[in-house]
Image 1 (cartoon, rainbow, N blue to C red):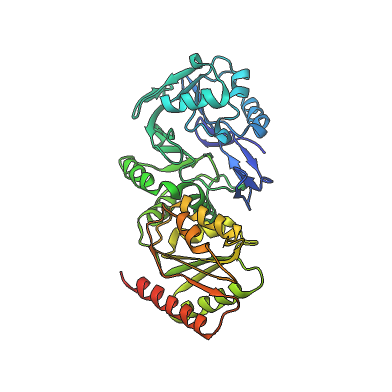
Image 2 (cartoon, protein in one colour):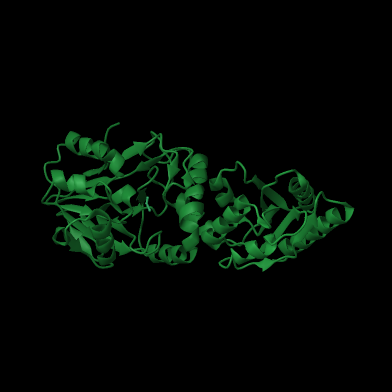
Length: 391
Ligand code: FEO
């Protein structure tokens, strides 16, 4: 795979990781990912914007060699996470005169993570510009997309935004630019759900901050480049600002079938009342799909059997995940089965302090559901449909 020309003097020099299937030992990557790095050659100075994951540092170095890059003046670090910063030591080894350009917080993180010497850095402030001769880099602080130090760069002459993780999509593709918008929408939403959604209030502020810039191209650090940026800007706007939809997510697990019967019944009862249901069996669900469903849902229902007097560990995992992702949910409910005693509701409730939801009456039953249990599920469905109908 070669480097690619984006604009005169602006090159994509990063790496595609087609085979990676897990990020942060947590996030599924069904379509791999890319670590995008960009080279900008000005009339006087050369800058490299971000590097790549250290596992692929040789790809980046080969691309620089292929372009005949003899000198790098600046390595701009937008974000300290190692999938973008991890190859900085390898780049410095080849280009020892390069200065790392970043904000003071990111500088501290990079020193902690990579043990780069402090004298290698040039600190920049929010809104500060750096001239490469005929090209100007303007640095914009965008905190918490998704770490506190994150920032982006605006290439003034090309009206191009280098956004790092912001607007990214975990996707390895041969396309330099977005071509299949449906596919990108899926990957970008998955990315938003898993990585950005917990910080949606910060995203809101950063989207507003970027409104002051004429942006013709967005070049993120994961996935293809947006040469029609309104596509991704509109999507982010809807994910952040839109009211939750008439959707209920059922995340559940079942051991001997009783909770499964309850879930099946509740699902139908909700659908009968016009509520869209997204159902996830936690025994084998892709948690990325669960996270994506939570972007739009109004209600989450956690279904759990009782294990050792408490919720099943899979249900605990779903509750902890939903709590960490901070979706715009409005309602939550717990359903499940036990035999001689249960603290499942009490434990699950304690795990979701970040969810700003109305907790509906739980439906916890003894053993296999009876008529009155199904009636309780009908009542729950009626309540959920009623709440969804209120705008
Ligand atoms: Fe792509 Fe937060 O690293």
